Image (cartoon, rainbow, N blue to C red):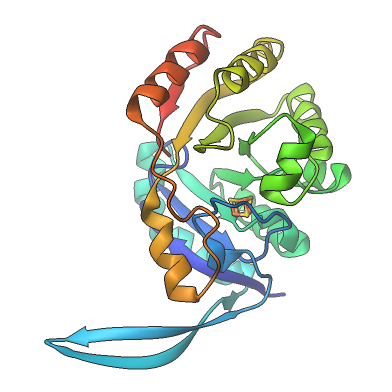
Amino acid sequence: MKGLLFNIKRYAIHDGPGIRVTFFLKGCPLDCWWCHNPEGISPAPVETERIDRIGDREFHSREWVGKEYSPEELLAIAEKERVFMDQSGGGVTFSGGEPTLQYDFLLETLKLMKNAGISTAVDTSGLVSGRRIMDIAEYTDIFLYDIKLFDTDLHKKFTGADNSLILDNLDNLLQNGESVIIRVPVIPGVNDTINYIEDLRSFIEKRKKYRILQIDLLPYHKTGSSKYRHFGFLDRMDGVEQTPVAFMDQFRELLSTTGIRVKTGG
Ligand code: SF4
């Protein structure tokens, strides 16, 4: 069995506890306007132009984003970083794209990692069938779970999909005793409002008896813009500036009243 990945990052400490190896699986059922990994949305390899500059000369070539790996190959990559992961309390993270879209491959790889004693995290949008997410939970230590918007129409507009299954899956995971880090992209013109913060605070307040380990607030930044140019994708956030620090501080303070640790930045 093979899975399709578009990136692997070693020592990525931003997306969960400890030093982590993060595997980025291709394909996502959502289409968020602000996506920082647009090359990961298509489930197929994406052809791109590579430009290398040496001195004042440019060299153009075509390259494909997306490479197949077996679960055993990913385990071998993780094993190389084992000493750092073990000593820091880290592990591996499956991200994307939406990693659950390659369900069979993800499940098989998670099982291998768990059998090898490696801690696992799955970074998910939550748009996956209820049965599949619970299967995945059996082999996952921590979920990194996005909450983008509560308003269904706005969620559809800015991500291309309804949010009811996403919110149901989150509740099922929490009620099943799973450990969850809530991840909230804070996007100007989309969800950077006091109303949204208040809705989020009350949503979390009602669920804080469960194992919500942390809330990560992820400010919108422009680093993804160059990718849109590079891949020739339409940038729907063109002209939008990054989320102001003052708003992020206000957001963090309001959410901190839940008693759950709130961290700004991924
Ligand atoms: S869920 Fe994540 S990977 Fe998928 S489109 Fe949205 S931001 Fe991009």
